[in-house]
Image 1 (cartoon, one colour):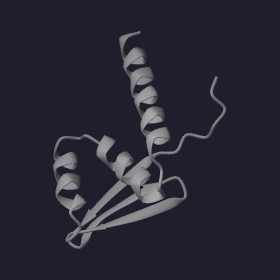
Image 2 (cartoon, helix red, strand yellow):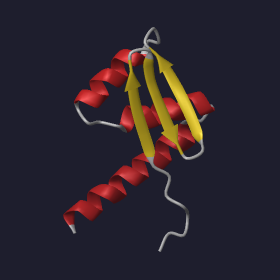
Image 3 (cartoon, one colour):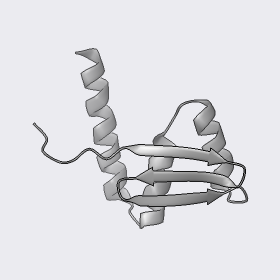
Image 4 (spheres, rainbow, N blue to C red):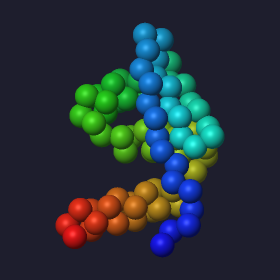
Length: 82
């Protein structure tokens, strides 16, 4: 069993932008930010993957995060079929 604490993404939308909370970190996406349009569309589609990618970008993570995220997605898909 995985003993790491599970961090959850929380997304809050307001007139001035979108706030992301992941673990102990928070990130604000202003309405003027180019990612804001992607964020709005992602919320409409209940697709939270772009938020994780944006967090990784803001944290300066690159291929390692992408590869880890893809592994997690595959693991979740496998769990759905069990």
